Image 1: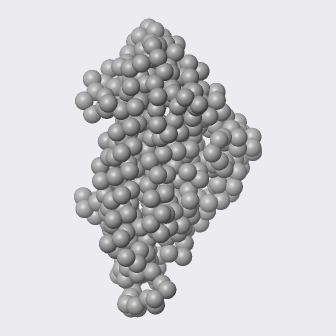
Image 2 (image 1 turned 135 degrees about the vertical axis):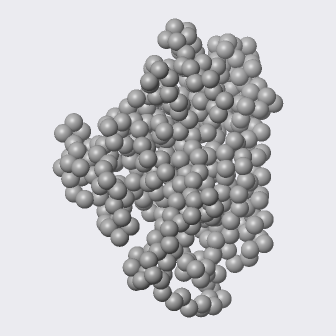
Image 3 (image 1 turned 45 degrees about the vertical axis):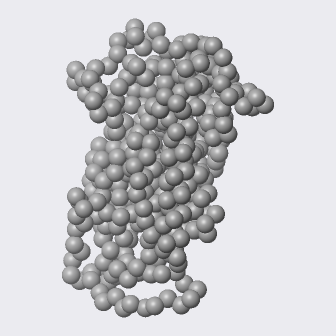
Length: 428
């Protein structure tokens, strides 16, 4: 687990024949997720649609009960804002706000809340609550506020459910692994990892709810919330927008999407990035809020050494990067749960992870997994929601790209994978 899983990149979209161009609006790829409705990156220009796709759009003033409409897309107008927080870009898009000034004020309050949470939850800030807990490891409990307590309690629920696949005490190994921009890109030795591995144990994190304290039993233990803090912050942003009467929105933070309501008369469209062609997406899914879509992938924060590729999602059983998944996307009711559960499923692998999702805390969850051989699996029923941008062969491997005009159907029927029973929900 790492503090920042993803990066943003714009990508094009095209309207179907006989309809207005750019009906889907601007788009943005975010670490495994492509979410329609965001502002676009001028560094990557969308393709122009063919001329026979262009039609005259009449400007019609909405009545008093209708939201303002963007005449270039035919969809409700977006009110947007951006800020860099928690070391990542964040974006808010509110659909159909009738009072632009009030919407912008609510957007700024939502960003301010993330900044406040960062000061409490970031282990990279020496004065944060979590840094004080880490500094007192092996010595004494530390009193914390409700924000950190909420994140830790949820993290421990996911740890117990996943038998430790997700475990915030991973941070004891931080000095051994470095996937930052200035990394020396040299893995630790097996002996170095083995010496630290006993410190990676969520059972040695003691929670006293009555006293509001956290205690790490062993010296040199540490916790890190890279797998939950951004998801929790997205939930808090959504609460602020809802309280302001803004119920239709899409939020992006640290590579994770959270949506509220709808985008006009349909859901929000979120794409899933191809793990071996990160500049493209292999499918999209349409979701209505409240829902969060979060992806963990082995293609972000990665480097090679001596011919072997290393990434930032570590397996607590080995202390080395997990090798069972290439990409995991989870659709959940909230950001906090989606953020933690997708990491656990990534480490558990396609079969065990998807089977376990039905029992995961914070559900119901849906899951989409691409394994290292690019075979696609999903929870039962989820495959029917996917609109593919890549073909699948008889073993469910991602194949060639399909053009926009043929990317309108759901996943084609395929026989189930022989090594995976139907309960895993393999796409077919």
